Length: 96
Image (cartoon, rainbow, N blue to C red; front, top):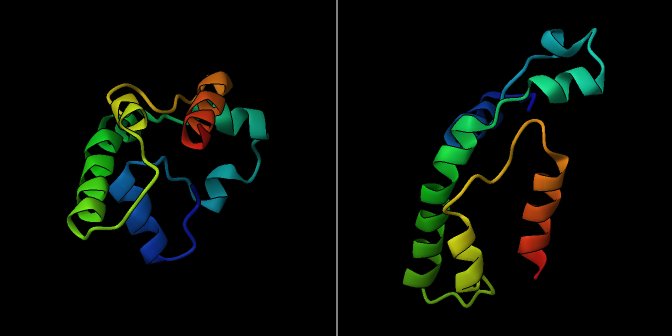
C-alpha cells in the first residue's frame, strides 16, 4: 500500500499491510513489487482485527452475512505475497 496521507498510513499499520513509498516503487515492475510484498504481519493481525469488528457488529445488534464458516477461515493465513491463488480464495470466501 502506498498511503497518500497519515490516516492512510495509520490504517495500513493497524492492519499490518505492507507499506511502500512512491519512490520505493518508481523503477520496479508490478511483478517485482508483488514478489517483495510481505503479508506476514497482516496474516497474524487479521484474525484478531476481524473478531473485534464482528464483536462490535454483533454487540450493536447489526445483522450481517458473516457466516460462522467465514469467521472460522480467519484462523489461518489470509494473504501471501507470492500466491495469487490464496488471494482469489480469500475473495471467494467473502462472496459465498
